Length: 266
Image (cartoon, rainbow, N blue to C red; front, side, top):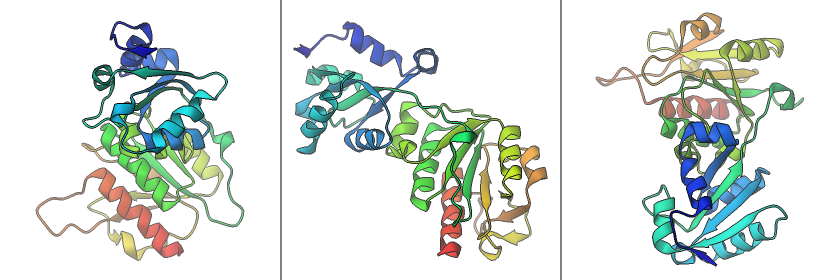
């Protein structure tokens, strides 16, 4: 059977998940796209419902993925008409795959610190834009961060645009939603050095030692880091700005900082 009506209860349920209140109430969220769904499966995310449309497939691997999800015991799979899938999709160019998944929640007890490698954490405080949070996740994955702490959140990590901008890396590393106080307490207990940024800092970010156990802390797009984090920081660094702008986009700045850690540790 091919679903063709937007009045179908399953389609209505999926559309409602664009709203944070509905995601919170059902503990569910949307994942769209081949790469994103592959990474969700690799991250052991439970896929409860899959909608697919072969005419939107961009390659030949999508059908294999549909069959793989359909073989799971508890998942439902529905083919959707091309016009209905376009309404269901939140992308300009859909690739014919969209799923409803169960949210995952982790706490600090789920983290495993490696005995041989110094811990490497990222803290994102009050990030407002889903695209920025998704890009930060992608950079954190690329740099090999051990965990991302999302503190005093302004953006839901299960926002569809976070999932899309992260290209599914939301599922590849531990993401914990905590208060700033809880995160500071955890970092202090484990002897992790807190690195903050400020355009007024004396030290250049490439000229400080980032090889010990550290947590890079970045703040909101509009206000930067709160005074709480600036006060507890063990080191405050700056990124040079030689033009008229006094700061970079938070996702861009985060990427520079993370890859400087990677460079020094290499």
